[in-house]
Length: 402
Image 1 (tube, helix red, strand yellow):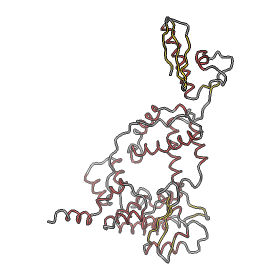
Image 2 (cartoon, helix red, strand yellow; image 1 turned 90 degrees about the horizontal axis):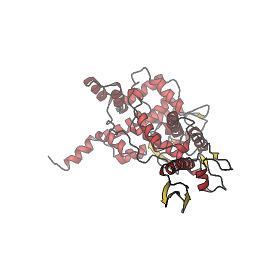
Image 3 (tube, rainbow, N blue to C red; image 1 turned 90 degrees about the vertical axis):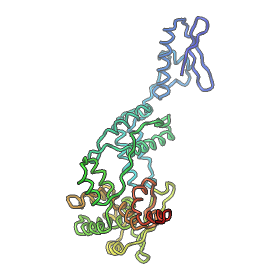
Image 4 (spheres, rainbow, N blue to C red; image 1 turned 30 degrees about the vertical axis):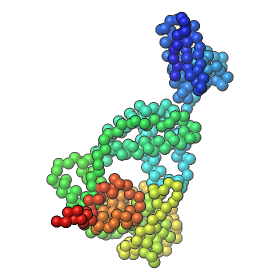
């Protein structure tokens, strides 16, 4: 930052550079002329700060600032890195084992939205707080699935992905300033509805005039009862278009495994003598690979034992010994259940939530549920806590005996 000081009749330009205070007489006693010079200098300082203007190595800084480009040595304009180049370099530098494929898949979607708003040719070093706030405001008005606007949680996740790329760029010297997200204002977050059964959701829709977006939100909180899970598994067994879909679905339904964990499952993870399966995690720890062990139900044991007979590849679910991708798993899911009674099921996560909810409704200790399903947030626990009826009643009767 530069400023003016008046000494006698003349104005001086003053600028602090590091620990030095630089000063130069402007050779004028006219305040208007001095202010005009100051404005030009401020603009040049901003260009230097943003990396768009380079000071020649042997130039006197004050002379350079006051020269308006009249130095013998030409001014070098810095092109700076574009947003598209920054994102691509980050993705190219990712270690294949550092992030799970599902995380990379989501990261690319988040960055696609950021790049679509700012533009691929946006100069990264020019990113300002105002740009991010405009992004938040614009995204919060976009309609997503079922006509519902994009949630604050989703917008924050997108910016977290962008922040990760930016921090990497800062360490690599590709950008110069910290990510300018401090103080961003987001729309208020509403609590997600508690998990409900199919009948409870249909009853609400029948009794209340709900918009398409509101109905979609209710179906996002669907959990299938035990009999419904077995019914949809029977349907998948008969109607699956790919031989791996039914075994994948029952693994999700009977263990609460995430889609990414199912795709990472290896043949050696299934112990049919001990009746257990190891699920390979990536979310619990960023620094190391972790696993958890879940018991095999009778039906799951029979299905997987038959499915893996004669398996030669490493992965349990594969095509020509190649691990199935996220897109292939999603395609199988949608292709099998669409245009059926079960087309209200919104993805693989419904079976994970159903597993947790059914365990909770049977009063199984939450510590055991967490051990079987892995990482659980307090927000997620809150959504199915109402399904502990016997536990909650016992707790209340311990306070009020009658």
